Image 1 (cartoon, rainbow, N blue to C red):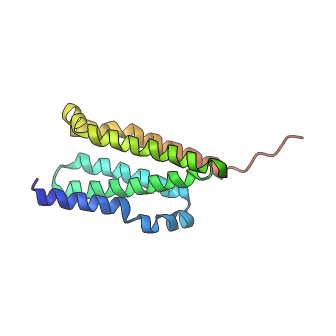
Image 2: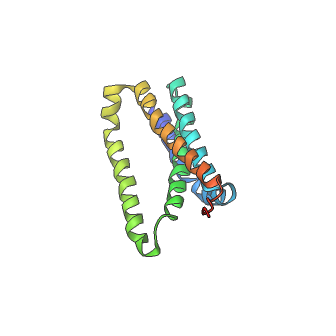
Image 3: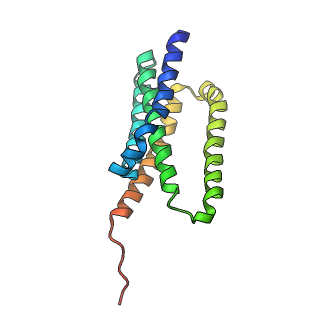
Length: 156
């Protein structure tokens, strides 16, 4: 694909990742964090489907916008959930560990993407992430169902 098309696709991907940040917090407050995370997982699933349908510029454009949106909803949603798991005194260390894990993973995947693509191919990369997306959707759904159940009452 021409450089101009590639640049345009990447620009839209970056917008898909960061532009929603202006309203993701409001969506989380209005719709609930787990609903937004489920939408993020579904956006990633849609990204894979689009990727498997073709490799033309419109496919890449749609897929990378969906990838960015899914990443945004899941990252901000998971970060929001994380704030419910620690005591105030643990905040700095917990957030630092979270950011270290996230951005280390991003770095490793970014630097290994070419080698992985060269070894496995486009279709296998997309099929290979399906279990991770399924795990994300299942874990989020499980947490959603756990929060919907009434709290257990102590036995007399």
